[in-house]
Amino acid sequence: MSTQHLPEHPDFLWRNPEPKSSYDAVIVGGGGHGLATAYFLAKNHGMTNIAVLEKGWLAGGNMARNTTIIRSNYLWDESAAIYEHALKLWEILPEELEYDFLFSQRGVMNLAHTLGDVRESIRRVGANKLNGVDAEWLDPQQVKELCPILNIRDNIRYPVMGATYQPRAGIAKHDHVAWAFARKCDEMGVDIIQNCEVTGFLKDGERVVGVKTSRGTINTEKVGLCAAGHSSVLAEMAGFQLPIQSHPLQALVSELHEPVHPTVVMSNHVHVYVSQAHKGELVMGAGVDSYNGYGQRGSFHVIEQQMAAAVELFPIFARAHVLRTWGGIVDTTLDASPIVGLTPVENMFVNCGWGTGGFKGTPAAGMTFAHTVATGAPHKLNQPFSLERFETGALIDEHGAAAVAH
Amino acid sequence: MLLIPCPNCGPRDETEFHYGGQAHVPYPENPNELTDTEWSRYLFYRENPKGIFVERWVHSTGCRQWFNMLRDTVSYDIQAVYPMGVPRPAAPLPPAADTGTASTGAASTTPLSPSTAPEGATK
Image 1 (tube, each protein chain N blue to C red):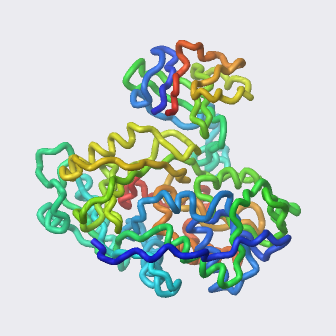
Image 2 (tube, chains in turn brown, cyan):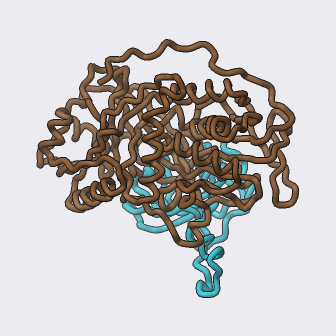
Image 3 (cartoon, rainbow over the protein chains, first blue to last red):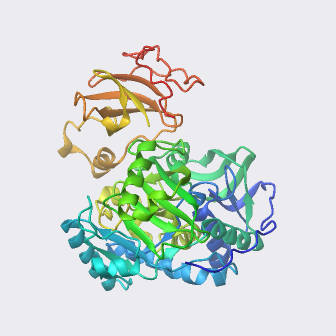
């Protein structure tokens, strides 16, 4: 548990400019991915005459609602490459952004509860090692040593039969990540425009030439979509479709507690993932609600099932109280992998489909998507995640493969 | 939790049901003749509206029958249920009342009567 103090709440870190009549590029969505994209567009590609348009307030969507877990222990090569790149960026970003967002590399454990889980987990550890991702297989005793509050008795419904462990994984303060990116963007001249909803796109034939917003029309040469749960809505405005379904995803926190939970524990099988935030809240996430939804809330029985699993795994939690629950809208794909790249509309690019795991990908999504927006071509790390894969059949099937808690 | 008006069993908790995604997606008549693009459309692309969605549910722990439902994906209000094989009721349906109860779709094949309207279905 971190003994660091949280940074003082800062004064304003960015301007609130009026939108200009034209920009070299417009990023739609002022969450983590949009801000990271703008940051790398300015830093790596020298594009500073750009704007980030945010419908609500900065980082008020999934960036404020995720459970802040960062890891890269994905099964397939393409995923391991992009998520491991993200993890390496997470490790250097506090210094680069000159902002300590408390990336705490306390490790992430993915529990195995069945023989099938055990086999898949050991296979994944092997795959991770081959891809240069730190990974270990832990037997139940080792699990107990790392996380003493876990119940490893074999008489529970889903006994702990072992776990994979990635020591370099961890959690970070998600709001501070967004503010860190926003401050650097602003310093480099990027306009971050909040309360500016995109209502349509201007096209010249098949080429996008502008964005219609609630604060007027903005001409632009390039548009990058980073709108997570609302990606389908934007795509429809632009005249194409995405293979995305938007679902509610819920999470909750308890009241503050003494440090009891030294790592991050995820259980794919019983659909719960638990960590203890820097201040002391137990932070838990669930699987998605089954139905499509844009309501930023889900059904209570999902929370109830998640709590039942959490209390069985962590008997000490039985006396804790749920302080707050909430939901975000996640953009899921059928192979549980993101979509990053070109669209049927010329000069319009999309970064979406990160589903339940977008936060951890933020820096790599931003870095590779900025490359795509700036050059009009895929980056070698995001090339496998193109929209075309649904036609070619080259899916990156991380469902169940990558400890994706879905 | 949604309170779902099963056409056979009446209003029941969402936990008795399973979700089937978008309704009215027929299997292609001649799949061998489809291009890769058309096949990918059938396999992977579904509507994802912010608003009224036409979707399938199955009452797994009740009558075990599939049925179709019109639901608002923002308010989660259930606007109509109707049997499989019946065309989608003519939209647009009136927006849900502020009371949180499902509105009755005038044009739906199975308008929700007050007895089956889920009171506070989405709360």
